[in-house]
Image 1 (tube, rainbow, N blue to C red):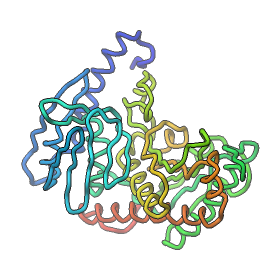
Image 2 (image 1 turned 180 degrees about the vertical axis):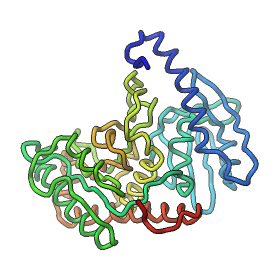
Image 3 (image 1 turned 90 degrees about the vertical axis):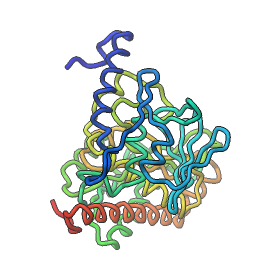
Image 4 (image 1 turned 60 degrees about the vertical axis):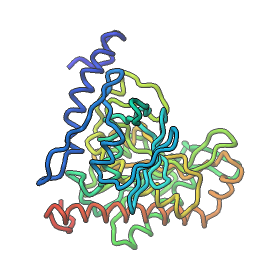
Length: 352
């Protein structure tokens, strides 16, 4: 097939629209009615060549008892979940946790519309993770301490990222082993590994998920926690412009639903435990999560470039709390998988 990057701009735009229609027709099966229930008739609204669904349909499909609207903001509410959606927004909040949307929302006919891509690749796996199909039954976590060797990563006034990531991963390893999980470290010393080598380690480790630990650097005022899952095929990296290369499938896209579910579990638990500023669950195409064939995420535990947060990261007790929080999120994600397998009749034991 001719790669999209080879098309002139006008032709590429037309090809992108055609590809999206085919792709989303298939992805809509992710939000089909469960077996034994009548098929749900989604109202599809097309704008700028992109399909959208209405907030009212989302309320009905997922049986939210309440839909509340106040100006540009709306809330879907149930006993266990509150989803806040705003007009012309790039973000959505689920139980007060921030998620970056693939495409902005908009208003039409008095209803808020969200892209069909965000429904299939974000909302559905988060609202009902036990419905994710073909989940990886894992008993091993591959832990990747970012940077190492001559690559120091971000350097703050208190220390280097490569030191903090390795120490955090050691602590995370102990926390996961206490849960009965096996662990494998991509590096256990101050050594440089290429991104390809890290990916290869993950891909040859059976029954595993992958967690890469990093710390951030930007302006001196930047602060907070962010967690990355791989951007779905046909979507831009968070807050970036859509490029032709974004339509190329990555190996990690086979695990889109698991990726976002894992990112959600880890990010939400870390926010709760650490009381960090929420920078959101975001999407990107970092090499270490693009090339892996297992569910994987990248966690940015804070900014070494910020004086206050850099001092916090430098304290061993914070890195221990971060490790415990990530481990707790992994436990929550694993519990959802086991519930899903029990409900589908595949049992709760970890199989190959």
